[in-house]
Amino acid sequence: MQPLGKLRLGVNIDHVATVRNARGGAYPDPVRAAKLAEEAGADGITAHLREDRRHIADADIDALMAALSVPLNFEMAATDEMQKIALRHKPHAVCIVPEKREEKTTEGGLEVAREENRLAHFIAPLREAGCRVSIFIAADQRQIEAAHRIGAQVIELHTGAYCDAHAEGRFDERDAELEKMREMSAFAHSLGLEVHAGHGLTYDTVKPVAAFPEVMELNIGHFLIGESIFRGLGPAIAEMRRLMDEARA
Image 1: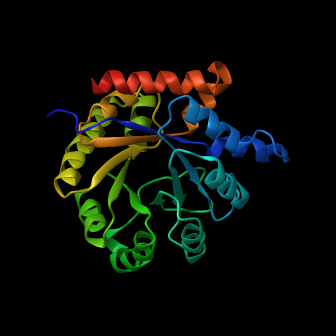
Image 2: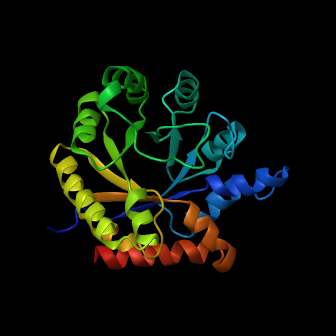
């Protein structure tokens, strides 16, 4: 099967804000990082406004909306507060993710099937406002079918289990996770859903996922911000872009 189109790269700038907040003040500025990412070839910027505001702050979302010329993907929990913020800003895209205060990072996909009715009502106003609605889920057929039924336009497959298995040398498990994502990418596409993927992707793990023809966008953050310490943000993004394009070709 031939690729369906250019593979987009969304750069998550949350952890620039993590570094800023570790000391307080205004430096480093996530908006500056977003603009550098844009110049380096990012197709979009992702920012997750968490309930506890541990990294991105409300003012960051205000500034990103004003400064960016590429789309903003606003990651958010399915809460009334976040819905109001999203409806005020009307970003290009919203990605609904699970969120727990005690987790270090998003630990898994959203449980859509159990909350189908609530989530259908939650995303309806976002769609009506013109936001592209994405649901962050595991590569599980039941969850994909539920995301389709509630009216999501996009699913983002959680690649964390695949990346963790690779990092820990559990290669049989890694390969099984990769095959599951391959099958579920094709299944979601067959339903008319746009397929994205992300979480934990690195230079070592990106190419197999980038090669899936149905995947249209990868969202990568923590690794790129970490790698930018050594390479600089622009070169770190350029190398990821090169690997993605190589895999797609």
